[in-house]
Image 1 (cartoon, rainbow, N blue to C red):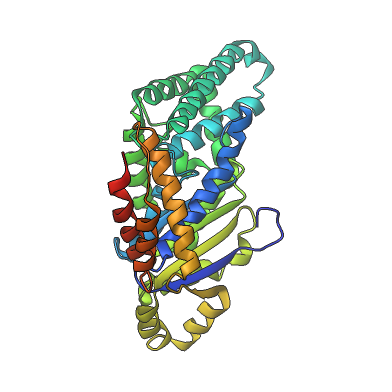
Image 2 (cartoon, rainbow, N blue to C red; image 1 turned 90 degrees about the vertical axis):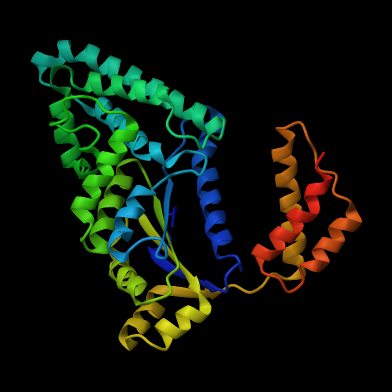
Length: 362
């Protein structure tokens, strides 16, 4: 998809509880995060190449799924979701500053404002780098609030604010950025407050909107920052409501070309077969089969458990090293734990292995 060789598509992942559906989704998030953060190794900024969002039908009502997808949007699992839209806004403002070409009569006066705006954006980018480097999952730091206020102040200087409003609307961004940089915003609010205002606006605009409309709005905004693939992970798709949400999106796959859309729907095999395969509209069933490739997850094999134990051991070693500790997992105890995982789900096997390893952390 990133190379433009595959169209937008859907994937249906089914399995029993604990058989790895969440693990598959988390693995894809990790891949997207690593890809977006790769540019930092050369001193650059994290990219927006793959953006992703995950929601669960079990936790929210079907009418709010689209809004929750927008609220949970992110580009890496090491950045708090709170800063997704402020980072998008900062990137968009940077693009605006590069392209802004005012009337000759304003050029002399607007030049200092552009320089100051770029300086403030650079400060914001440095804060984001710091957050990523310490893998902070904390809420937005006061430093981000302060520097974003400076960005807002610079934008209001000598007509830049109004010029940016036109730029945002021409790029179909105003629905997402209006809450951050709106004409009616008299006083600056913190990033946390801006996020809340944005979420309220989304709920008012899309709370009863069609799923396709919400995805179009999200994808247009992602497109503005160079996103190539937008991954939407929708868990607990076990009844007809989930189909009512998925099909309007799937029927428009061919329209999602920039960025591409990859929808991953996951559910419990028995629930899916009872409620969808055996108890739902036949034409809708055929459409699901047409748009979503079905994959069923099985219980882990012996090789899977071996690989899982190695990954867990590496993960524990890495995390405990930060605390000045290490894992010296007795080899016989480890083998015994692996044997106890026979016939277990991934979730059960993970607990067995961690419980076996913990006494050997010193």
